[in-house]
Structure formats: structure tokens, C-alpha cells
Length: 151
Image (cartoon, rainbow, N blue to C red):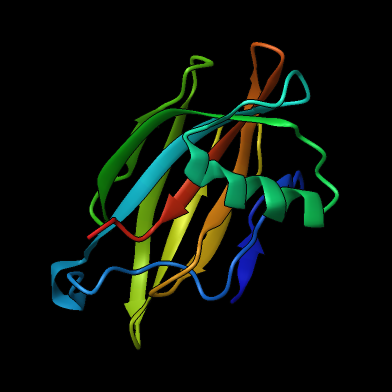
């Protein structure tokens, strides 16, 4: 797994083995489907909603990111293409953008941009999860979670 920071301001928690590329993606189509989840992580309370986010909480604790509460704010499958960036509206009023830069040997290179954060080129494989800090929101931190779409 490799990532290339295009900006010097890097705030990224990247966890998982290999990353994501659904089997349905085809190089000639120049597009890939990505499950995008927006999670609010904070140090207020201990709520983990839905329970599937307990795994994320454990991963963050291993990385010394001591959030105690995790709440899913949105979950959707996005089609990311090379032709134009795909926008994802975040609850803090900003938009994250994802754009497919290319595919080689079943690995997609996707550019992830979030205002006032680093622009990153991330290589995405068939499994795993990418966690990207996406800005402050109501006393916590928004986390953009990218993964293969659920089957």
C-alpha cells in the first residue's frame, strides 16, 4: 500500500490491509464503486452507533487516537471515475472529492481531496478500509471511511 501526499498538510489515519477495489470495477470503464461512510468521532460519551463501528474504535485506539464515541452520519456507494471528480457533501458544509487517476493490475489510484486537509493519492486494493480525518464538527472530528461496497 502506498500513498502520496500532494499537500504538505497531512492528517490521515490509514488503517487496514490492502485497500479497496470492488470486483465489479473494470479498467476499460475507468470507474470504480466505493462505499463512503461519514462518521463523527469524539471524546464525549461512549456511544458506538451502529455496533459495527466498534472495530473502528479498536483500530483508532491501537493508533493512539483516543476517541470514545463513534456515530455514523451517512453511508453511500459512490461511483468514482477518471472523467470528473465525484463529490461527497460533508455535514460541516464542505465537500470531499474523489477522482480515479488510473488502474493497474487490479489496483485503483484515487485522489482524495478535502478542503483545508491534504490532497492524497491512495492506492486502493480489493479489501481493507481507509480512514481520513475530514474536519471538525459539533465537538468532534468527521472521519471519511472508504471501503469496498457491501455485497
